[in-house]
Length: 376
Image (cartoon, rainbow, N blue to C red):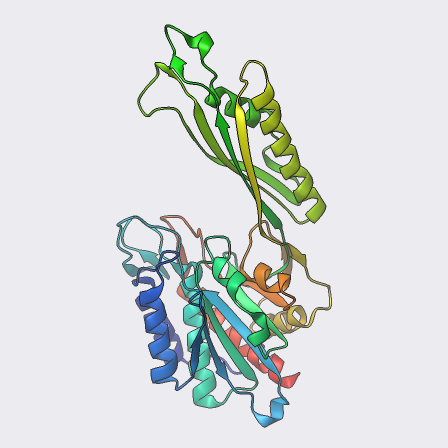
């Protein structure tokens, strides 16, 4: 098995730090996209296609011995917001961190850097199989970029996204269906001290709805959460609030359970709005943001990944996750795609980090995957 050289590992670290320092909040990926395009076209001589959403696709042709076998490697270019705080990657002990109080962006630029470095190795030394490189936009906003990507353009038999922030070796074999709920309660404003009986509190209605909901971990495969609520007049306590909006979600590895839980949450909203104490009007919007999936035990992508992990000294562990990734969008379109852990830690947090060992290890795993696919 071909492992990355010391020079390739050093180059990987430099590229990772460079990419993290380029701001690319969801919907604002243009700068990092331009840098990736310059690397793929200018340095590696690959043709890059960009779709209407802004996703980038490049290909390395399979050698004759691979008999047309190809694999997709995918990572997303965007990050969650970090305000006006600069991302300044620094090495602390054995890992990369942000010198400032914000995310590092290892989610998902650790994977972006690994994939580019693997492409460098494949171009320089000859790819053992065909490789399709896909860099998506707006993954952090409910997989918006991947949902718009046409998987019919792909030539690979299956693919991988490297987008699970957990120790290398974990292979995601199931991911949930995810529903988002927005409920707007509309009551009647009144003076809270003089005519409160003339008012109808939208906040009280929303509070009743939330109090009735089952939230948190409902069972091994189902979760529910109310993540945001807003209502009333800022700074005012003397007005019965006539408007309140809440945002909530339900996720489950069971499609039916996800549907049941979100329906239950909607029922609680209606019950609260119709309660005579509240008597509010209600507008509810429910959207399924992504569809869940579950891999079969012998799925080729899972088997190849596990063989590659073992070859690199990692013990594969099949896991279920409550999070989504671009793999959900591709699976929903009928393209087999597996999400692999990339060794990053505490993604979406100011203490986010990734060790040098994890970056290097993931590069070795990707190179091993290419070898497995090439051998068929």
